[in-house]
Length: 355
Image (cartoon, rainbow, N blue to C red; front, side, top):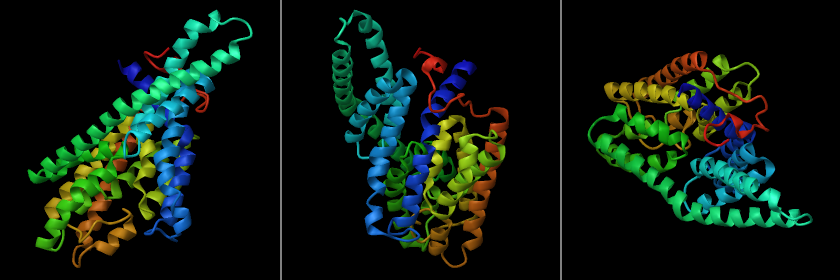
């Protein structure tokens, strides 16, 4: 079982790691050009939405399909991913990680059955129409079935966080918030659940701890430092971590660290530990912000910390970073990221159940 889990983790890493460069590009564009960015630019800011909604999921879907059945599988996987993208109103990274490999696996099985039976001279016709017909079927299935399931998952996570907050179990909310964040459900949780509750609390008390629960840049910073200091030498995750730290902590683009967790899912434990430790401190110290920091950078935090609350808030950020780092570094030492020999040409042979 342990070996199969490691193989599965390696497969996820193979889908995510080759696309880290695209995530970094999106993170830089977002940090620089959105209205609350470093140098706001209305023209370049238009790139942000289409890149996270379309480009990044399609890249993951293509890579997942290619790992299973080469370029042919990648094309079908990317096309199938389009079905979940259109079927939901949130970034579909999770849907891409489902439909990409499924598209490649389906194409592989069809080729195994039919390829030897194609008459000479009809190979191109078969290749074209078999991929096109299969892609059409998978797109429709993804659109009506997979997309709504992921949206339902988002709604369930929001309801769970809402219940924990109302039950005064704020530190335990990290158990839901941190895994949901790495599936790109962060905006749904923050703006759909926590921000409205925070507005009500801030009107009564002048500050609200709700604004700190999802936006804290500390745990993500600690995770990236762990990858940089304890990650495998020469790996893309280690080498790209410093740039991601800048985008995350100073630019406030938390999504930049999500692929690092997706590449090694057990690292979500570091995020949960960091989030719970920081949230517990926030509750004990009575910390809060006057509004949602947008984006969630340390600069935005400084702008919405109420007078007399700097020690409480900034200490919570530091605690989150420290705990996340120590837990993450320990995990990476004990259970390092299982990377394939060639991240861009990985095969499905390392994936249990798909060979």
